Image: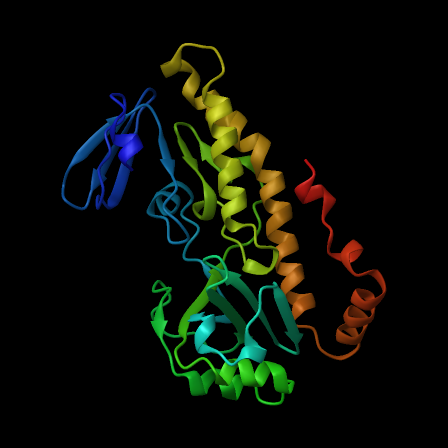
Length: 280
């Protein structure tokens, strides 16, 4: 933030909730919750899953409830029994659930995220609900002993009900006229490919390239946003779809579950490699 504020060509305003916008042929006027109006050459809605910019631009309703609940915990490793401490990324897969654990802060802390399928709380827009550790233990009844011991060793958990949207179907869902969407506002993703932030960063890079192409700025903004959307929507849709598919595989039951496990044993890293995603 300090670096941004040092620029003469940036006017940074925090805690300014956008309520609506009005677009003309050459400008966009934004109205905030405080009643302030701001004029600009373009509007980029990077306001997340519950984006108000998206609602006015596309009018496609609220995000859908996935039925997946993310229990999250951050615990100091020194507070855990020695056998539960880890410096590796570990994923546990089970019927209707999975858990991922990995070290953070130079290994001093362990981040743990367990996703189970269940009933979402009423307040879907709150991504940080208080929860009872007993609820998670009930959801994980019957899992293997090492995983049970890890969950039992962590007393405090937070709950996040996961919502998303259908994969994008066309470029005009990401930009129209002088208004564009970026990140979760355009393509909120389930966390099963770990690409929500990654796709937002790619969006930003492509948006910068599109706007930097030569031309008279005011007249070229709309075409530039169109190029941005055209170059991004299909990749974003593919990643969205793959994230959904990964979740189905992670939480598989029956024969699909056994097939997944054997495939991982036989192919290992080759199965987990995603060259179309990481080797652009």
